[in-house]
Length: 337
Image (cartoon, rainbow, N blue to C red; front, side, top):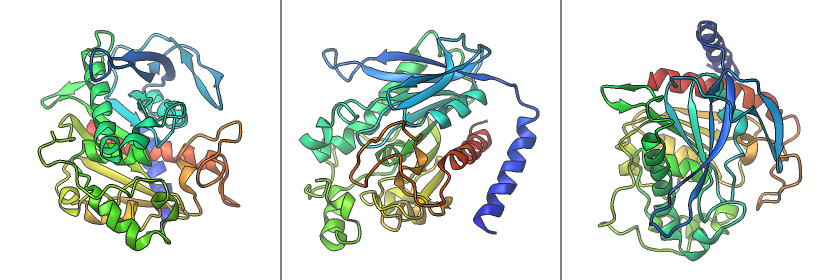
């Protein structure tokens, strides 16, 4: 079945479901959650949620939110979706997807990763070991905070397994949600990869991530978060994840790759991940670069692969993100409800 036929069938199925769904708007608010220690800075989290309030488009730096700022949330949400941005990213960079999930009844918690965001890239600079260990732990702490928050904990639907929780991430955020699902990083894999394949994966191997030779300590606590039942990884950083741990991942997974990705070359990252999962679910996006999964910024944002806003000739990012939102919503509806 071709890529586009699969997309058309998925869209039709989702539209049939949507015809019977509640019509919500997206609400938005920003909260702060506690850091790892009492003296650690708070983590900024953008919440996107279903509301009946009227939305409006509001520029926020190079991105924009089309939501009801501070609108009253509905009484119940389908599930909590943790959203993890990529290296040096922002909690606002995937607002199109987050707003679509909110309009379909989900609470989305998009964190600004401490030490790995557009203002502060100190985490990777200090230590790759700490970078790959801390990112999933930051995500789990945000889940902790939302599930304990009096304003939200009783709104999240539960079942016999507890609160319904999923996760969505792009690039390093794709790694993050895979780690939450049980995939285990081994930094020696990354070093071996870049010794052998640096010319074919030059951007990744030039980021300074390949210097660490050792795996994370065997005695370190697991990065897996048992509450996370389903994940979507968009162009994930994957080469450092072990085959054995990927084969043992039990949450439902959906993996996307950008066909022309030069930042994280798919055969080393997204395809490595998908080929080792117990239930491969890989979607290739034709004629797409790495940042196709992000909202289009209103200004030039430089990256190691050029302008974040740029697309290959003929690629319609706006149309793609609308379709991607349909597919991701359908995936979480199928796996969490």
